[in-house]
Length: 326
Ligand code: ATP
Image 1 (cartoon, rainbow, N blue to C red):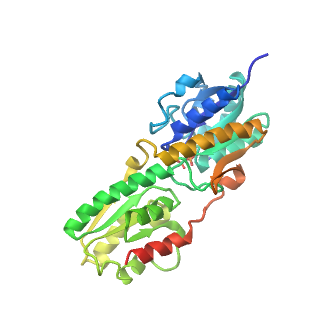
Image 2: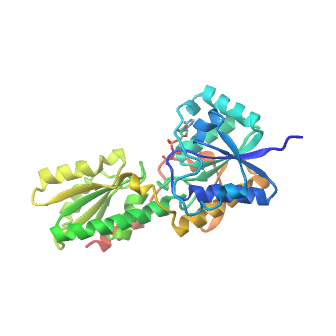
Image 3: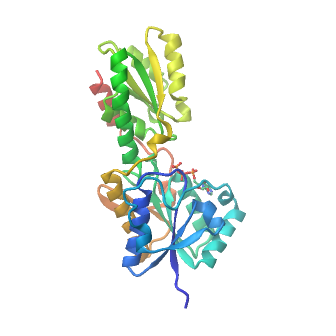
């Protein structure tokens, strides 16, 4: 009888700690007598049959590395029924009966649709995204590392901001979620954060300026989420130049450096627990769930729940930032 395999892939944007998760899934599976195949380049590689068996030594020396050894991709083909049918053919051919998908909300949306179409394949998701926008898990793999990188950068920007008495708008990633911006602002002691979750009718920039957030200080840092809804740091800088010309304003867009680098200890432990959690879930007969950690406990979250939009940000963080930035 042919032995079955667990397939593992990383999809969407890369996130630090994905390698630690690949290592954990592979080793935990082998420890429990299961076999693993790595699928390269996410759903693209699944469609194109870019598959290789993973043994324990294949995942040696990767827990500390950023990025993903399996590479990642965004796949237009997987968004079509024909593309997903090809992906299914690959799984049949490779004797893969369970698939572990490490990615963000898009990747898990794809997994959910695929799981509905092909009931003989068990899909398990792991939250791998710097955006922290998946429901049911307190944090996602890569978020903590990205947050630490942001704080390190903002600390450096503050040195130059203070030396020149400047107002800096620092744009951070997060897609439509403001976790990196809000928590980054608190951690870096920034004066304000402009995030999509804090949208009211009031103009956020006007509110900050009217609050006099710069009156007692000779420099200020405002972290702006990249979200389209907020139009980004350049937009706000232009507005300040026009509406409040007394301020010497600058912009720094942190960009892709937020994705790279060695994962933090927190992300390595999170990825290790989630990777092991994926195998435990399979052994328990779970299917079509994302593994998360909520209140320090492993949680199984149905895909539909995990990918709900607008994961809320704890509003107390907004209040605390306002309070501490006087
Ligand atoms: P990140 O949070 O880092 O951006 P992500 O997983 O959300 O990661 P996306 O680019 O949104 O990244 O999605 C990754 C891939 O998942 C897409 O390229 C596509 O192949 C698949 N995918 C996304 N949405 C769907 C969908 N509605 N149907 C099928 N596949 C999808």
